[in-house]
Length: 83
Image 1 (tube, rainbow, N blue to C red):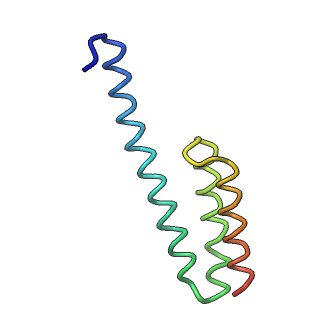
Image 2 (image 1 turned 90 degrees about the horizontal axis):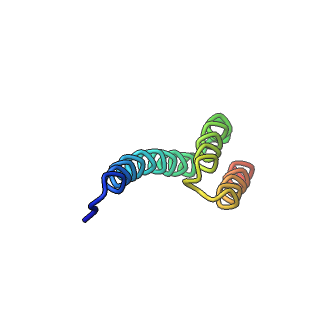
């Protein structure tokens, strides 16, 4: 267990950030899943920019690596184009 005041604060901050990051990561995963389940091209094209925005936000905040985000966006774009 931490003995220093600063270490205790760091633990509190890490827990708060972890919860925040998990929320945004899970929200994005659900949005990706929702997009992949679509069969109508028009609906998918309408939802794609929103999902890409969520992925970009995760990459900007270092929740996702930028190359991982790029791969996800690429695969989703290919999926929508193939509909």
